[in-house]
Image (cartoon, rainbow, N blue to C red; front, side, top):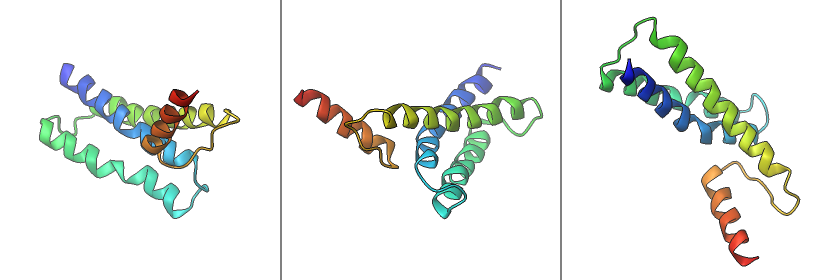
Length: 106
């Protein structure tokens, strides 16, 4: 059971940047579709490598983690979008480095 929650947290954290990306592109565009589907092979590989398998009990935890990670990325993006002096891109790591660079100059 502990392994399931550990994998769930990994899936959640892995999906945050993809949710951030998804929030900053046109809905149903190629980039939007990729931001939703690119993490899926990683999650399947994680299931197989961890020995977790595909038991029914794993689906609510991992699907919930997937969507909560995507939603968290969207929330982070919208929060940064409200800053007047900051232009948000589709790349979460790039935006955080820009944000850290701008806060050290102030």
